[in-house]
Image (cartoon, rainbow, N blue to C red; front, top):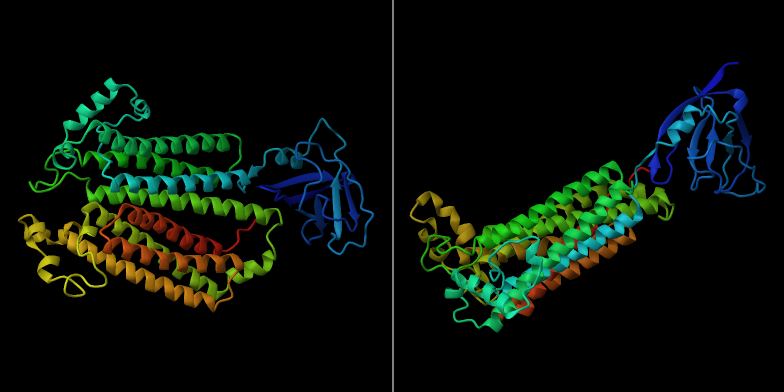
Length: 481
C-alpha cells in the first residue's frame, strides 16, 4: 500500500528542524479534537500534503522516544483549543522512521535563558572595571606597575623584600622623577594597589567570561549564531587586555612625544582606544543578553500580545524612530570617547568656567590652531584636533551639548509616539541620565576636576550609553521563533 509523505517543521522550544518521512497510512492516526495546550502537535490539511504538523506551547513527548499514541482530550469546551491533533504510532521499534531519526538530531535556535543572565552579569562587570579604571587614572596610579605578567602578576607583594623590589623597578621610570617625586613606600603601595586591583578584576572577568562561554557552547546551551557572537566577544576581550598593556607602555618611556616639557602620561590615542574597546565589549554583552532573554520570553509565550507588538515595531514611525535612536547612541559613544581624549591630555584643567572659555564662548584662534602641535611640519596642523588641549576641550563641549540637544529632541519626539511600555521607560531614563551627565560635566569642570565628580561623570556616561542601547533594543522587531 502506498505511503503518505510528510514535510514537517517542528519548532520546539529553543530548537527547530524540518524533516520529511514516508509512513504507511496504517501508521498514521489522525484525530479531530479540542485539545488544550498540553498536547504536542496540531495538524491541518493542505492541498499538496496529507498533513502539516506544528508544535504548541509544550511537547507531549521527548524527541528521544519513539512516537506513540497520545491520549485524546476530554475538554472540548476550551476556547483556546486546537482543531486537530495527530499522533504517529511507530509499531516497529527496530526500524525507526526518518521523522524519528531527524528529531534526535535537532539543533538549538534560541539560547538558554541562563546565557542571557550570565551575559548581563558580565556587562555589569565591565561597567565596574571601567569605573575603577577611571579612578586608577584620576589617582595617577596606572604607571605604578611597570611590567606585564598576565599570570604571575596576579599576586600582590606581601613581604618587605617584594615591595622593595617593585619600588626599585618603579624608580627606573620617568613618572617617579617627574610626577611622584620623592614618593614614600607607603604612598607607592597605595597607587600600586589601585593598578593591581584594576588588572586583577580584568583577570577575574576573563575567567567569568571564558569559562562559562566554553561550557555553554560544549553543552549546546547556545545556537550556532550565539556561539559565533561569544567567540567574537572573547576575541574582543583578549584584545582589550593587550591594548591595556600597550597603553601603559606608552607612559613608561622618557620623551615619548619627543618634547622635553612633556610629563610622563599614557598616549591619549591608546587611552581612547582602550576605553573604546571597553564600551564595545559592554554594548555587545548587554545587547546579546537582552536579545536572549526576550527571545526566550517570546518562545515560552510570556511576552504579552506578541502579534500586536510585532506589528507595532514594524510600523513606519517606529522604524524611523529606531534608526534615529541608533544614530543617537553612536553620538553618545563618540562624545564619551572625546571625553577620553580630554582625560588623556588633562584638558579639563584648562578654562574651568562654563559656558565661557576665558573672555568669550571660545578661546582665541591662536590658541585653538597653533603650529607648535604640527611639530615643524605644516601638513601636520591637523594634530591640533587631537593634541591641542584647548581645542580638544572645546570639541568635547560642542559634542556634549550637541548630544544633549539631540537626546532632548528624541525624548520629545518619542513622547508623541505609541511606544511599548519598556521603550517608554528607557526613553525617560535616557533623557534623565543625559541631563545628569551635563550637570556632572559642568560641576567637574568648574571645580577643577575633583576625583569624585570626575569618576561619577565617567560612570554616568556608561549608564547613558546603556539607556540608549536599551531603548534601541526594545524597538527592534521581534524574532521569528
